[in-house]
Image (cartoon, rainbow, N blue to C red; front, top):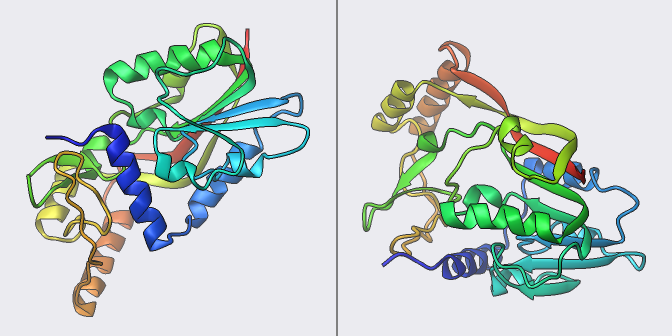
Length: 263
């Protein structure tokens, strides 16, 4: 039986906090770029899918009413402002009750039926602005893992859809994009035969990543995957070759960030 989304998120955040992981440099850049989109005339701000508060905790001010909503009770323990346990497709808020609704790195995770409902809910409660950030042109099929226990194939970060700027432009009926930007890093996408060959040769994608969780059975590995130094050296050389010699199918910037304004 597959994990409920709330169970999955709680388990993932519990492991994250237990390991005391820090955000990467690229993640920090995305946080800063997201915060730069917030306009000065916003006095009430909601962060949907706020996680452990990496964004909303930085906005807390005596001049602003801030709130974070997440599906994970474990994640909300780290949020330092008003916090609500809830689901993005059924929000416990009145119409247009927040000047700004932020939804960062959430939409790519949503199942088909939840996704459509979530967009309607975001538009319903936002009075002036919406900020959305999502991966740009992500090749979902290139980033699948296989659970060694049940054989389930899934994206390590549980992404289920890819986005383009056009996708974002067509997301809402009453909001239009006022400003957008692409955020680093640049993601290189190779032809599928190259990726499959590299995986078969154990050049990339070898082993079950540390702390990845299977959404089907809940399996995760608590052991760091280690390899011989010579193998690591060989893999580095091959990856260097793939990066500089073979033709890259696409070269896209990693994230799209969009600020919407009410029509």
